[in-house]
Every structure is written in structure tokens, then in C-alpha cells.
Image (cartoon, rainbow, N blue to C red):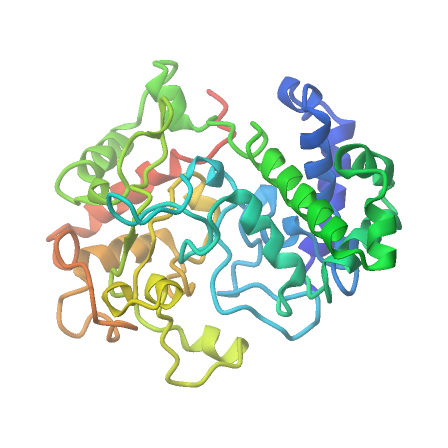
Amino acid sequence: MKQACINSMQYLGALLATSLVTQSAIAMTPQEQLGRFLYFDENLSINKNQSCASCHLPTAGFAEPERQLPVSEGSIPGTFGSRNAPSASYAAFFPEFTLKGGIQGGQFWDGRATNLTEQAKGPFLNPVEMAMPNEAAVLLAIETSSHGYSALFQQECGNDAFEHAKTNFQPGINNAYHCLADAIAAFERTDELNPFTSKYDAVQAKMTSFTAVEEQGFNLFTGRAKCTHCHSLGNGKDKDLFTDFKFHNIGVPSNPELIALAKLPSDFKDPGLGGFLNNPKEIGRFKTTHLRNVELTAPYMHNGALTTLKEVVHFYNTRDIQGKWPAPEIRDNMNSSFLGDLGLTDEEEDAIVEFMKTLTDGYIRQ
């Protein structure tokens, strides 16, 4: 297993033991504290070697830390998912999935989880992720976890939660498991995952200024490069999240490496939103990710087909130039309005990359 499986609790211990603990962390509610324990506990996987943080690690922008792989390896060695792990940070700002007034929101690349709570229920039981056999097994793993928070779990989710798991009382199991997922969602809403401490935020607060090339990149991003048509400003209360919360097919090529790792048919094509909704009109569309910490979250796109920010910008700029790129994974419903042949120079592409690097949290003014 990747080193992140070992490091997730080390990160938590360091955070609790050093000055990295923020006032917001100290002031966490019991529910948020429980969610944090659950998020970092690798004991809740079949081989006790994978936590939520293993594929959504803080130092990797709460995304997969292994940049050489397009998809994450599961608790069972040699098992891989079929999609690139998205960032868990700032996911709290995505609205619940809705079909009203235009399809938007939800969690996962295809929006199939209505909200953070529903999303948190999935990975524990997914056979190519944490691979636990059932909800009761997850609850019993909490009771015996070496990290010693079972009393807090009972306080928040019921004194009889573990007994219900042992006696297979399904209504009680369902309630406790929902409580578990709700606690993880509560932690994911805290400032630890949503700090807004990037250089961009400092510029917006007039505490510093962009360099000349960052300023050029920002002007291109919001202007001729057309990035804000999908990665729009706003949407984070009074902060900019750089997403429209909607779903698009931008014509990303298939990724043979992903197909091989996930043991998919060689002609596999991910239907995205169309598969979730069973609607051909939505086939090939995937959620517009936010761009916070994007410098840390390579590789990119739902299938990890693009490996660097420079490659991403170059793809948007040149997708429709003949011979530049492999065929799209799915041509149906492909967006051609805001990308494809933008006419940007190599230097302008680089400037956009430099601007996007200002979205990395933890900026310290020099």
C-alpha cells in the first residue's frame, strides 16, 4: 500500500501535538471531532491500512498523494477504482444534487451522492476502496480501533450502536452508520478542509499583490482563455471557488493506464452523469471541480489523463487542433463553446498556470 496509508494518523497526531492546531480545530464540536477521528482511522478498512485520508490527504490538497497513478489503490493490494480521487477540501460548498433549474451539485464526479453525508457512506463498503463487508463491520471496527474514540462515537451515535452491530439489528445499524457519515461530513465542513488561506485570498484581502505574470494569468483566466465560463468566481459564500457546480463533457481522451489498473474492458468509456441518470443526453459529462489547491492535486480530470497543470491548460487551448490530442473518450454532448482552439501562446499558457498556483492554501507573505 502507498505511504499515505501509514501517514494519515501520523498527520493527525502531528496536527494535534504541534502549533498547527488552529483555534477552529480546538473549538471543534464533539461531532466534528468524531468526524476527524473517523476520517483518519485506517482501521476502518478490510486490511486496516486505508483511511479516508489515504486517498484524500491534507498535504496533497485532500486528494490522492500518489501523483504517478491516475486512480487510487484500495485496501486490498492490486485493486483500483475507475476514477481519479477528487479533492475533499471545499467539497462542502457544493450544493445538494438537483435536477431543478439545470443539473448541478452533488458529490463524486457524476453527482450520484446527494450530499457529503451520502458520499461518506460509500468508500467504506466499496470493494475497490476500503472494502469492508457491511455497515456492521465498520461499526465494530470503530469499537476496537486502536485510536480509542469508541466512547465519543457512542456519545454521538448512541450507547447501543455497537450492540446493534453485534446482534445484527438493522434499523440500529442504519442509524449509527448514518450518524458516522454525518460526523465525517461535519468535519469536512470545518476550516481544516476549507481554510481559504491562499495567495489569491491574500490578494483579494489587499494584503499582497500578484506578480506581473500572475496578474497576466488572472486576466487571461477571466478573459480570453474563457476559463470562468465553467470555473466561475464566487459560489463560496463571499469567497471564490472557481466552479459552476455543473457538469460538462470537455472531450478528455481515454486513459489506457486507468483502464489497465482497474481491469476494465479495453474499449471502456465512462458515461459519467449520463450513466448515473441513465440519460443519453448527459453521457460523458462530469462535475466541474473547484480549483482550490489545484497545484497539489495532479493528475487531473475524471480519469487522470492529464498529468500537469501545463498539460491541462494546453489541452483547453489546443484540443481541436488536428493531430494534437487523441480522440475524446466520448464525443456526445461535448462542449465546444469555451475551449478547443483558443489561440493562446506558450507564454500565456504558462501565465495561467502561475495564476492557478496562487490558489494553493498556506500562503505566507514574504
